[in-house]
Image 1 (cartoon, one colour):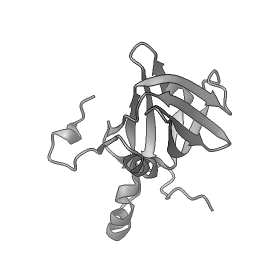
Image 2 (cartoon, helix red, strand yellow):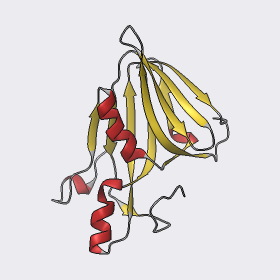
Image 3 (cartoon, one colour):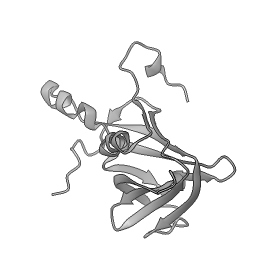
Image 4 (cartoon, one colour):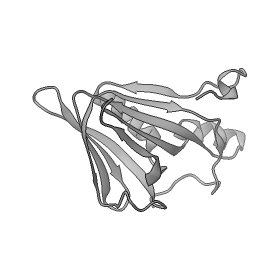
Length: 157
C-alpha cells in the first residue's frame, strides 16, 4: 500500500521485523492497546500467512507529543506472521462481524524442534494462538498517523 507520507519527506513509517523473542517484545510493546476488528483477521493456509490490519497507538511518539503539546496519534498498521501451520482463536466469536478486539501483548513459546507458539493476548480473556515453523513477524505502518479519537493515552488503571 502506498502513502504520500512515504514520499513527501515526512517521518518514515514504522517497519519492524521480529525473528527472536527480544525483537518480538519490541513489537509487542508498540502494539499494546491496538484495536482490531475481527473482520481484519486473515489466514491464508496455502501461503501459510496470518495477517491483521489494526489501529495502534503511537507509543514511540508519546513523549514528543507531550513535549510539543500535540495531540496523541494512532496509525493503521499491518501485522504479518509467516510460516504459520495453524491458527486457533479463543474467547471470542469470529462470526460476530461488529466485534472489535483489543491487543494486550504478544509472546512466543519456542518448541524443542525450532517450531513454536506465538500468542496474541486480547482484552477480555481472548487470544489468538499461531503454531509456527519459526518466528517470522513483520509490522508495517500503512497510513499516515491520525489524531487519536479520544485524545487520550490508553490507560489500564
